Image (cartoon, rainbow, N blue to C red):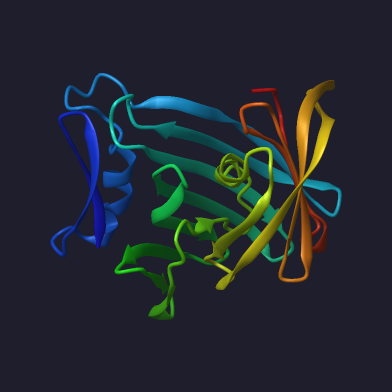
Length: 248
């Protein structure tokens, strides 16, 4: 199991079998605390998305993204609480992600699913392979997949994680390997920068950069601000849309 420790205000990823899986979320959550515990790293972004399915409002996503203190090896921790009403019942999601390095590739991930069904998914990176462990009422299963350098994680119905994609491609676009853990998909996502645009946030137009994401036969539309913070995400094939309630 991968876990994070803080020593001399730096964050390091260690492997150990002595940390129970139930503690992974706790350890990740405090990873950005310096040794004195006075601050929780540097705040990159925080906010709330209003979530819609087929044009009908179904819930919210409240999130934070923090990075390590200046001078430390770059680590980012992103977490959220998501509540959605789906046709099959109410769903709660609690994703917690660690990304490392300038390419912001995922190095550890956990998501807890609650509501009409419950499960927990953990992903760890080991020797260039991702090991995905899923625990649910029916038991536990594992699967492995290749870990292409700089693989990003974009989970289903989670909007804030697209910050890492926008930061990776910058103003040029490109192709990025991604993993979608709950769907069990892994593929290359082609990102095209369409140029300047605007989106409506809280009743006002906000300047944005429009990105088109294409992969696995589907298209997503993403709008981010000048610092790469997600303003809006549309996934037409899933009928899903996430729009910030306030500008960053």
